[in-house]
Length: 337
Image 1: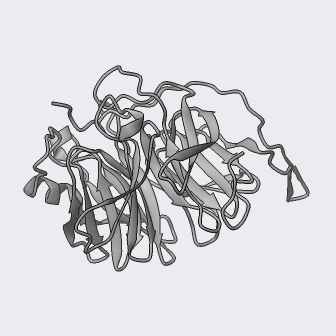
Image 2: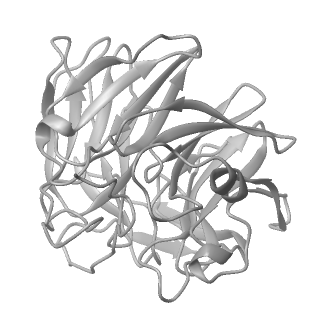
């Protein structure tokens, strides 16, 4: 039986040559050189996995290895610390700490995973509210809920592996790639199962109205056919497959006009349960009307999260980098480059 694999999504530093935006400062003013079609916006991040766009239009990226959320200017690449002191990845664990961040209104929330007592840690596995001063406190204990309400699918980490979060009504939806489900979490801390799945390894989320779009990686060996974008609502009897055919899908995002894009980490390296893709095999793909994908950018190195601002995609990688991919689409539908 193939096991749910989102448990050892390890980071390997593999350098990828590329243009870096130049930033010249003089008399307190910064001048940014415009980005080309594909440019490295930031580097040197410590264990990034997820990301979001804040209400100010900036990128926010959690650095799971050091318990920090970093703000990145999407035009210049300038970085600053937004919050720190969040639970970091346990030294002996392959993954964990603050993996994702999202805003509900103007307030930031961090998703923290694999830091609980079942793995030798002492922190709450769940959602933490972060105030304007960078202080934080847990508001929802997803780990305890998962331990008390385990998935019927095969698992061996009691508190699960919460991977991504997305604002939903009075709270958030959160994927658990190990217990194969999406849970709903309210701002008051109530946790309930929103939707359960077979062993499909759910990853990234996107919400539009009452429709939830979810990327699924599929259990190992993570074939391209397993990489799918699914759609469902709170009362849907079943999921609708939007597109399939990209290996190790980790995120999905709506783009300009009626476009939708997904992020594939690439060809599984085959090392073991939860190991990442082979370096340099990732891709940004566009969803086609016939349920297939078209490649927009390939040879991406261990991508893990996708954000779209205007007509530019921002890709976070496990190698600690953020890449900008410009001119995604032409309105209203766009064409892949």
